[in-house]
Image (tube, rainbow over all chains, first blue to last red; front, side, top):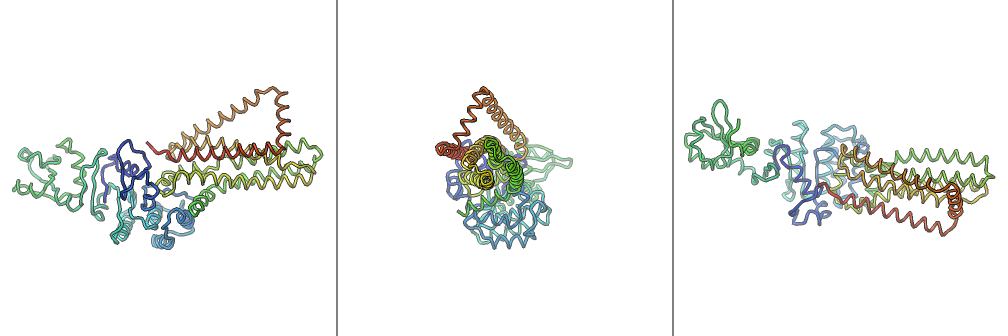
Length: 258
Length: 234
């Protein structure tokens, strides 16, 4: 599940609340059917979390991390951890403080993948990494999910990453869910209708998410591309990416923007 | 058990350098005191005073702040620890265990030193020094409870600076308040109290009371730190 939204939309707050880092004002959160606060320990044995910033002290090395984590998780697999460390090219005796940003992120991911977690939660984990490292990491996530019993909840504003690996997408803005569903359904249903500025009045407002005006005309995000194509036979439709959907939905209150 | 081993290992690994520096400084002081006692071993009051100072210095070093909480906040571990299957009680108990490990380690060195001075001087100060050590450790532990209790309200590196200053100022205020209260006693009364206290410190009853106070302060540390770990960001 990809969790998208612009900066400040509430992605991190949602994840932190879910993980009981932040307290809730009201409502209830259930993970694996368990209460997120009452059954916190049980839930946390079954999940793994990767933050955008490295939480380990610079003085530790890989071996120290392994010693620390083996006591924390009953299902910690030391051989698996060492295998990931080797695969990621993380020197076992070098101090973490000397690692690059990419190496630090890989270390966090290696820890997250080594205790057989059913749910991997990632908060902007690929932000700030170069495309090569990002691609490598996404590939590892795909491998991890292959057995069908594991899930990844990945918050990101790099939608290209989510287009590569997410089956489902949830889009939030100002703390509210605007869209949630299968990525292919969302991408398939939305479209960008291109027309002249004076043709905009002919489009049913019910079909419109928002309209981007430019010197050449108007680009209208429609919620149901198929039905819009049937209604407006002469119009030109472009496919919408997650980025487009996010941008048009963010401007949904303005309706027309440029 | 393995959980505590991991948690204690982590904290010892992070604090041992700082504590070893304090241990070396304390040992140097022990050495200096040993050599002084070697010269003036006939004066029991003087030996007592030196043993008291030695107990005070080692107690402040072992029972005081070991830097773990600030390091955890700055590294981001404090926030990360909330996503681990570790309860607030387990984290607080680990903090207390690490404290007690250092108190025991420093205490053993202190007792070794005192046994040696007793052997040279012919006096017996072990119970007196241990009593003093536990009492001062307890006070240092209490001040650290206040400091850490406030410091742990910080969630990241930025807030830890401001909250760290507030925590330090609170501890300084408490300490100066304690000194003011002590200075408020008249000189005569103070001297009488000190003499009486020194005499009392050698009795088994007082030792028991000190042990109880120490145990109470350990429990207080545990409950305060646990309560702070239980707190979640708004």
